[in-house]
Length: 530
Image (cartoon, rainbow, N blue to C red; front, side):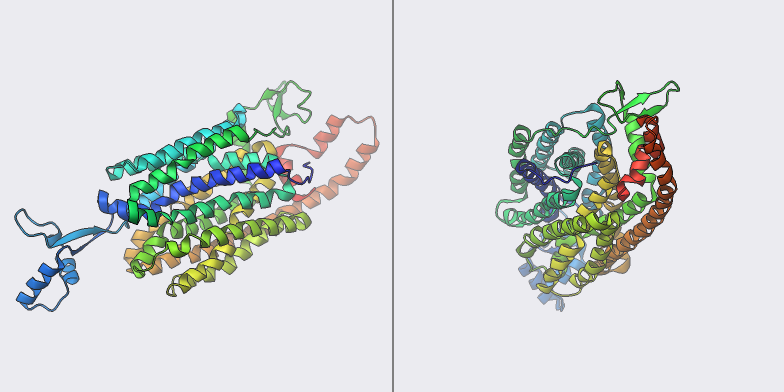
């Protein structure tokens, strides 16, 4: 059982460094949002419209012909003018909007599939090889920073795609390793807050990505990638040189192999000669926890909520550029996610920690439900009021709606043994990101079917907030049902356990076998407060 110790100053320092690492993890992936239009125009990909390149000449032609239409309508109605034959005057040209399936592919599958599939094996590898997690995190930070810089050298769409693939591969290990390190430095009573603070990196990185609009307009999109990627090398050195690899919790560290060849848990592993667990055992054991109905429902809710957040995060600039082209999104989105999204993550962690100390995991799940129910209406209003009120609606949508991230991670950690947490977090991230991170692919076809980007975003943004609340509510009922059954088991065993404790002839091993300290019972009893 973990001691409820206050975090040391050094633990707080480790948290600050990991927040900085996570900030650049998010910044390097999200600068695509703000630079995509410029990249699409130069590299020519995605949706496009035919616009005047010589409006004066076009107006003269229209005046001569006596046609009462604007140069914009003339080019839009005659897209062949954007591909003039040799020797003809260039009157119109293509404007690439940075929207369409090509962009959604870069934001979704090209990055997400490799990001998710790399996360699980990286997490398991860290546990079975006992590698230095801070060293590994430093190396992958350097590598994904390099991919960011190389994106600035892209000369074709497929160059960007390759850089995004490698970016996803290297960024995949960040959260599993960082959360594993934090779980060793912070006890259960402070873990929700620590994870909420760690998730400041999401909002700061995302908010700072909108500053790229300013750099893009003044120095070009390539400079944005050079500036965003370069600091990662210095931060990687800071991480490696100043953050110590924490001592791992010894619980469930080794297994004994009995005469039947079956693996058997050894609690007294510091005395035993156990064999180190295999990769297969680690993976299958971690996966076993996600067969549990509570974690299954939690993952479904997390995947739905992730889908809503991803769709809006990658398309917010496209939305405002389409409906309100004169608005500069960086005037608002630089600080709203950074202040209010981050504040919501921390406050959500604090609330869930305070409630969890009194009423257990159920209180964390209630925070998940209420946060999404309250945030959804503000997300709807964002899409139906004009700026600046649309951005004002984003304040409660971020502050309340984004309480879920750290709380979900805290639930996953609470329900898994210490030596499986890296794998468990990696599997959880894999599930919610593989599903939720690709829902944005529905946006182009849904926008076409509805002939309205706004309507499509209503379906894929606030509606998914509400759907996740329903999934989290189901999680509560499933948890209550399992808890009721386990309480019955405890009540039936308590008299027998007390009788055995009074009998000094009974060995400790027999008592351990009775109460069953395996990972399955850890999930069933320890996580429920027994």
